[in-house]
Image (tube, rainbow, N blue to C red; front, top):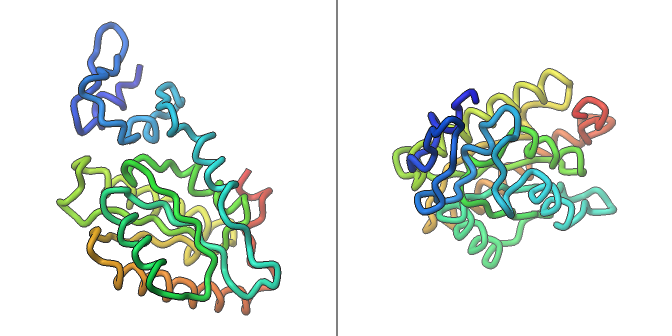
Length: 206
């Protein structure tokens, strides 16, 4: 009963009736409340942490030769996801890309970000809407804050903050999306060549 969900919901879909109650007719299933809840008291079917862990695991795996970095991209389905999928169809880059569409980038919790590294990703992209253009009002700002916190954690445990990148995109920006993936892939290849082990140690993230 910390009322975090009541404060962060951009749709006013949480009411206080003794305990917080989600109003189904108002809920847009953005996932912000579930990502912010400190006790995982709110669960959204199809968007629980376990569901997202499963999407990561079901995606492409790392290149056995180790030449192409494995990227996991969490994309807002209203903006970044269409741009990135269009870019993937028209461009070729030296990376293996796992595109995970989410209702809002603000629904991605730090635990889910770090799960991608635990499952073998060389790098993670958080792709949200532009400032003041988020359907969930402040979902993009929350996503950026969580990306910064997760980057600081990665840096602190020696994995390197450069393995996590936050960017904003609109749906009609496939060229920009391709440039982001290409630049990030180049950065990750440089990190791999300079480190004996590029993978984030699982024991540090567990």
